[in-house]
Length: 439
Image 1 (tube, one colour):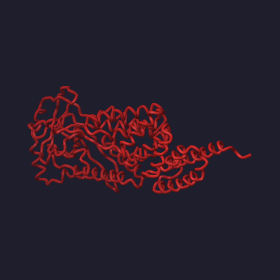
Image 2: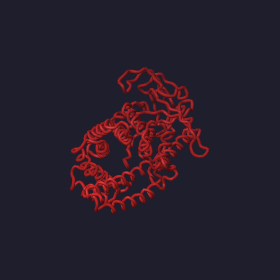
Image 3: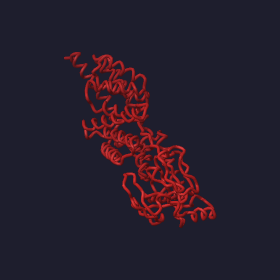
Image 4: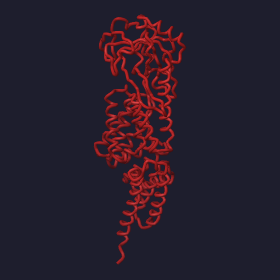
């Protein structure tokens, strides 16, 4: 005996849902079934799978009584592709009009608007979905959207705080969900750069990324590797940063920004290596003039005394040469040198220059949070209290090694330039962007 119309409706809706879910499974687990060398083919193959699923949807269209459910699944299918699709957006918009409580449709409609770069409508969709049901997808997507809002610094700071809160709520709803951890990492990374670069916030960011990588879906998201590479670069873990940009590029071969960031970082590191090794490429006579002109007076207020550290403590200082510095923090020590060059870079962060001390040793200096247009020039004397030293040494391109010693300075206000302490007007917060290409 033939089944009832209700049974056919249920069976057809189940078939359609399974087909669309299978489409997402194909996308999300692609690299578990294919070598990363096939990444260039992923979007094309996904498009072919989409065509098959759309054909199934057409086949069962008349058997599904709920037009809202059908339109939701059709719009969801279109949404599997990385680019914006107008037909998919229209399907989802009609679905929520027919059935306003259809949370899945609201979430996919919001993602459609996000791809269209319509941030405000995306926000309204995720907020609307949460009005009907608290769910991790709406929470994490709202976290993503809020980071793009705000016109004033105060508004931006408020939205970032809310972004972090929504991301934390999404994680709490499902601790095993890697995408929620990934978006929490992005929220913490944005907060880190927007609110004083607190070490504890960066630690939370990197911890969230580590949790995300345990999930096979999030692990193969190029944005995860790209954004973590941004954090590694800021930490001056350059080898890990290069690997991260490289992995992002492998997972998404058409993503030019990932390739460009790796290329820019490599060129920057090669330039630093060359300029430090050649001591700014200055002629011997000029170099001798600079090193012989380094006097005790160049220390300015740090000469034979003490200084007030960023945490407010009074610290005694001993003048030492660059070669006597240890890796890491050199407490209660101060170095002084003359600037021999600045390092050209497509990215202004950090402002990088090199100094030589009185016996000719040469170190790079990476200066963060300096106001645009400020900095130092060749010949300036620079004194650095309690220098934080990193020795960079790893294989670069071809037979070239990336090798130099670097002093990291988080704020210009601790520097003494030409015998005088720099003022607060030289300081400005470092702002770096977080990729939200496919969160």
